[in-house]
Image (cartoon, rainbow, N blue to C red; front, side, top):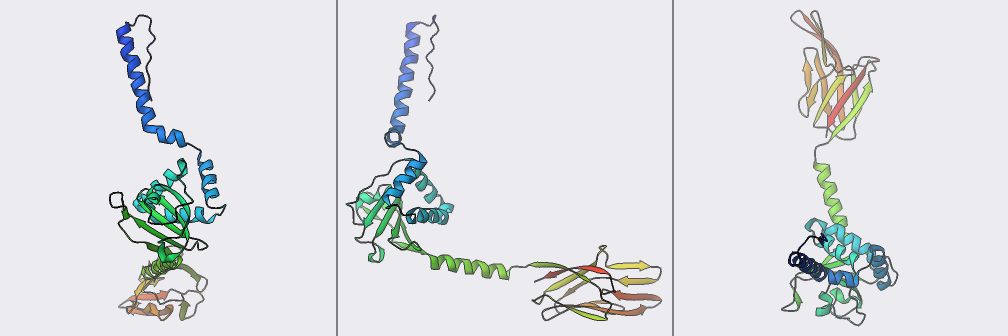
Length: 285
């Protein structure tokens, strides 16, 4: 609200009165817009205490509200409704027992409801704008939701939909399955032991493996000699040099191999497992 009294002693009465009139009009507008909040105003802490009293001091209702908000916040319905509840006092009627009563369409919390409820259960109803939540007594794992109340027809457009722990568990399993199917990269290191062939158990069969020497090199060239310290192999495709297979994939992991060979006058040496050398690898699941 922005008021301007303009108490300048030289202001003409006619001009000053117009400003006074404008101030009163602004005050009236502000009051009309916020009357319902002022008449029912309380702090958030008071609102939470009030809701807790209505629920018989049980934390179940509060927990269900938080779960409901988290589940539906993507479409914005629940967050706005709960903000409405938390910032003003709520209508409450113990005598309303029919879940289809038009009175329950008003934003608020209602307990002791047992007529025409989902599954014939008794419980509490939370109305958030045009969305309604039903919480059965003694069962915080199961929550029901419906939306789209029509004042003209005095009925809800949608049927009750169960949102329960089994559904969340299934969603978790689906997400886990998807994550397992996604590409993953496993990083590791090993110290060479000088053996000719060596297997590294990864616990899974990789689709590809890449090996580097600690200094980041895979090939070092010295005069007419090539020293191969690493390379890249894929499932069904070994990494090979003129000295033979350097890197290969097998069931459950990968192998590194040593050996020597010549390409004309050039000497090739596979050094992916030199004794005492440090190597890094990347394995793609």
